[in-house]
Amino acid sequence: MYTDIAVIGGGPAGMAAALSAVKLNKSVVIFERDERLGGVLNQCIHNGFGIHYFGEELTGPEYAKRFADTVMASSITVKSETTVLSITDDKIITAVNASDGVFRIQAKAVILAMGCRERTAGSIMLAGTRPSGIYTAGTAQKLINTKGLAVGKRAVILGSGDIGLIMARRLTLEGAAVLAVLELMPYSSGLKRNIVQCLDDFGIPLLCNRTITKVVGKDRLEGVYYAETDKNLKPIKETERFLECDTLLLSVGLIPELDLIADNDIRINPATNSAYVDEGRMTSVDGIFAAGNVLHVHNLVDNVSEEGHIAGASAALYADMTDAQRAQRADRINIRAGDGIKYVIPNYINTPSKSGVDLYFKVKDVYKDCEVCVLSDGETIYKKNRRILTPGETEKIRLDGKGLNKDTEVFVRERK
Image: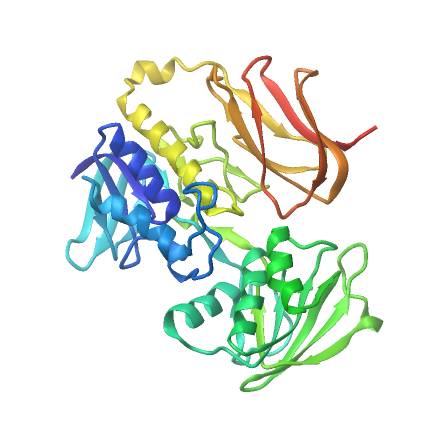
């Protein structure tokens, strides 16, 4: 079987990518391991989605349905309840499902849109026993919102990412007592609006520079020991306290779902634990693209969809190229993360557009009264003052494409 574009993952990034490609008259196949499209949106019943993309507030399932309905009404082939087993650098996908068995599809371009998974108690080496009552925040969300199950009565949340903040509110609305949200860093890694709407509005304390030192319990969680942390983020033993609880939610980071490409020649960026990409979201392997949370963790699903559209349109253009055209690309412009910047997307630019290019980045710390600067071969081509920048927010700047040279650096500094 052959297709122009193969999309791995039917969440917001994958659906947007597929729709952009099919609009450019390309044959598209979406591989989705769940029984329906939408990804994690299907369990996110709170509102706040679609404000930028649709101009109105939607719940996660409502946002997903708008895309899914358009996909199903198009010529896109959807392979649901299908597991992709491997992807070669030659764009051969091997997959399996109940109706087709094991099958292969040859694509001209592949778009990775598998999203990410949560870190677990084991991955952060959480000390203590392993009783029931310890969940990742996303698992608890799925149990409550899609299964109608209660997860506990007295809860502590470790980590203040957006899903942890949202689940603090959700547990409270379900009648549980959320005793505290503990955060290792001196700042929250979630959106400011979620801190206000999910914690402040419900009187839930956010305790920064805190971490759990040990969990206690045999059959069911009985409580946790927690302590303040020093400047090296190590627990201070004499500050250790015990907090009685029967539930612990972990919101301690996300890992891109990149197991599929572990044997491919795709260059990995240690800052994102995902692929280096160009302005079209193509990886270091020609014809393989990445978009959405598999590339970097987004705060807004609207931006996930936007990135999916970029990857889908770029993959469609790539599918139309001859080998000679692909070999004639201009020298790449490297985009580096400088002082104060955790990462920048894209990592390099092949062909600067006359209409400009958007750069997405996250900072390493909280910066107030600062300026974002871009240097290209030592020349300042962009500078803008910002009142505040926080690690929990994805920022965007637009460069007009002029003055971009081989070595370009984005950095943040305090205003003089």
